[in-house]
Length: 295
Image 1 (cartoon, one colour):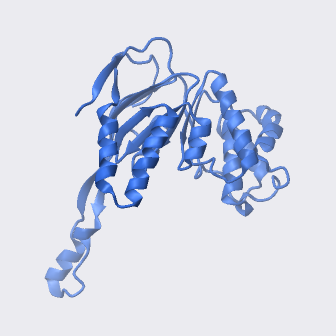
Image 2 (cartoon, helix red, strand yellow; image 1 turned 30 degrees about the vertical axis):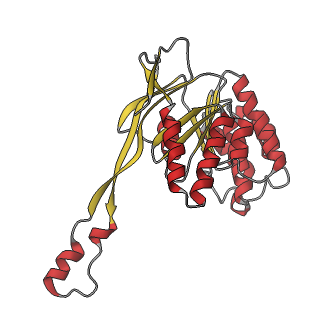
Image 3 (cartoon, rainbow, N blue to C red; image 1 turned 60 degrees about the vertical axis):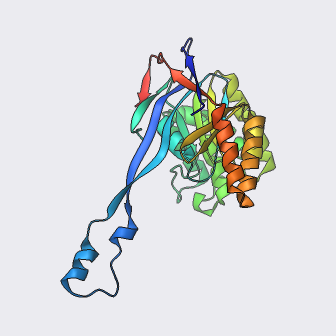
């Protein structure tokens, strides 16, 4: 409704093409499976063991994106809007219900729940993480000092990771993931550590990655982080693509939307969504990249 379509002919070699991707999944509804606590006899037992009603969740409605080299794309939206779902699809952790993702190289996903071994020390996890990403032992050793420096954990690197705060662990994960010079890096809430020095170092590192002809996707509830680190912002709401454009414009609209919601002005907030979607230029992918990564 009110959405213009723009035909994008893929010339050159974009980093990532999201082609008509959609995600649906089914979950059990607890409402129908809950037994009547006052029931007795066989009828009660039938209700207690009845199969739960399955409900379809529209996690991500159909959308397309073309991300070029050198772009840093921030993804914003309320909880449940599809931000992490989109990141998992791009990284290949989840397969979309329909559509496909094409990429110039394998995306590397960094999230606060990235798996490292809590009982091992930070320095052991550095080596483990590097090996898991395909480095040789020698390459891991060569990059060890720079990883520790970026993480800012010089004084704690030999302590067990289970003794780290969530911020310290997040910094270490980012430093390890960024060490491989990935062409496509996906960061999910890993930079919100409250550490100003680390924010400066991570911003510098992300700028280096973009300068090396790569691209970065960043999910964060910190709009300041998005504004500082991104050249483009995608706003999702309840699985719908609302805006895709300049960070300042998208962030300002999103802030006004959430402000109105917090005051109970749902109608005015809905009007902002409708106006944003009315001027959205939808991407239509007509020619795909040559390498298919997931889909």
